[in-house]
Image (tube, rainbow over all chains, first blue to last red; front, side):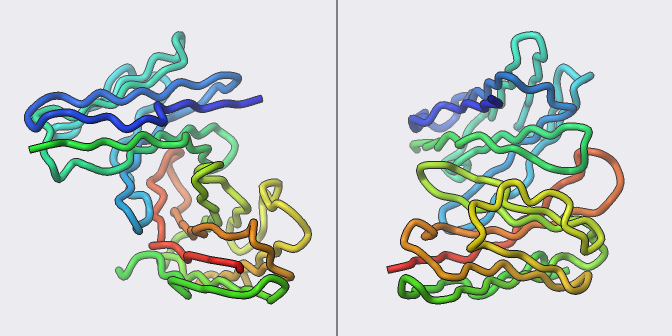
Length: 112
Length: 115
């Protein structure tokens, strides 16, 4: 069955460091992958989209890589700040419509 | 735009009661999704609509759950009768037709507790 795995344990890092979150998937051939941020008590908010034919995408301090051979995406936040503390969700989509399948999310804590 | 609007934000109900959750998608968005989020199962897609027509309801857990979209600006998710295991956050989301991989915009969720 399709499976999307994100590290369920919280990631604690020091302010200013680079945070790297992992999204692994099996039994899935996504056409694209998205990353969302979710704050407590709020809905997920879109951050970045990367398509299957793209290796890397950047947006300000964010960088996403997508390796369809390894079936893995890495999400990086450089120069992390306490305000980056949140849960980050990866989501995979395929060509049949705009359906997304979400991973369980990883909670990031950036300490000052 | 006000974004995706959901109501109620919080609901506490007794087991066996009917629950109706409401959603107003972003104007002009052709796709509407209902998701459920729990600690155990994460964010799960329940059903989605395209141009008010249900496309995939394979995620709806049981016959107790039903969803409708009578027009482009309104959708409901109904649970009848409700059970304690239905306690979760229910999100509505919408996206416009167009490029594959369009951003999906989520509402703030309806927090349901069934006691």
